[in-house]
Image (tube, rainbow, N blue to C red; front, side):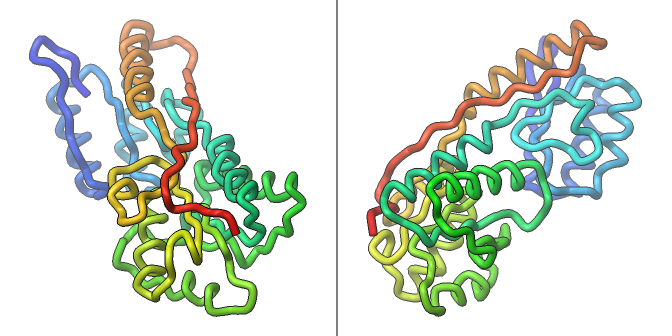
Length: 253
């Protein structure tokens, strides 16, 4: 991001690591005053450019996800991932579900660990048996194979509900389950995380945990401007509250 008389510059990387590297480098050449970055989750390839930003004491605010090896350095605005996961899983448990599948990211990120912790803590508090086979990773690609997911539904005592760590993962599961003839929510209830457009536009709109993106943006800008004015001030980390958005993808058992 660049704050000048000409305004603010925006770049989109579409989660492409080469684009992320190229556009950050290009903006640095244009002598920007600071960055607000939505870093590619779970990426390790662009450490060199972030190392240069750190070495140059460049003002950076990360939003939504942190950069591995730089978590304690760059300012951060994120979501209360643990509480959000608890909202989702508690909703499913209150609807009577006891076989709740956790559809997660295929990494060891802090986002994954916090949302997984929220999932397991609710099951413990509700005295619901935790089945390690009900925690699986899903791909980012919407058209990727769903064999690992579908195989669980073909076994005895399959899941009756899914908590997906993102709306994109929820849409992936929804699409493949519908293609196999499962009805949502009659056969399977699904809750996502993020309140993305893709979930709202399904034939059966997705119940989800909403992130307040506008508030995240406001906080990020405020923190960045403060960092530019006071470059040696203490690192800031702000977590924004989540809320449950109930739609049509969940029902009782």
